[in-house]
Image (cartoon, rainbow, N blue to C red; front, side):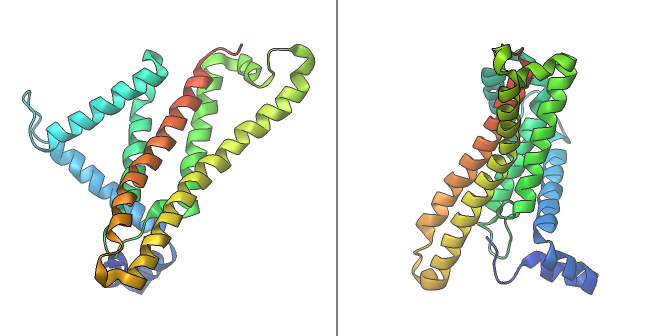
Length: 231
């Protein structure tokens, strides 16, 4: 949610006008970096004193990691384990970005198309790099279909289909988060004093989790498809 007064811009003013202007013009970058710094600090704190009997942050992060890994293996199989760090990072980062809008004075990075498009490009490139490394030149069979006579037509269709993933991944996340934030902002402006926005903010929690889950699930499916032999 883009609030009228962004706390990060106020903090940046202590470092000079140029820093404040950067936050003003590129809030999606500034708040993404802020989230990454917070996540890195939390990870360091969780692993500072690793114990066989986990507690506190270690226990929480172990539960999250184990749940994500089990879900990934159920979708991709054992062959998908090498991609767990990337996929888990995508989920945690997107979820953190989505939920940041609930904090007054903050900006939701995923409500900016540049952020969601960047994530879509990363997933798109990794998918095809994995396919090429696994199958070599035979990876082109994924684009030719099962019938040689229809291969030229199928190639064009498959290329368009794969390129459309960029649009689908970026616009789905951007549209849902932006629309949700606009509704909450309008409700705050019209009836903020009467706690009317609270139900919508609760819905934002569910939407934020769901959108992070969807983009991670789609990434799993795309990478898993690239790993498999074409039929």
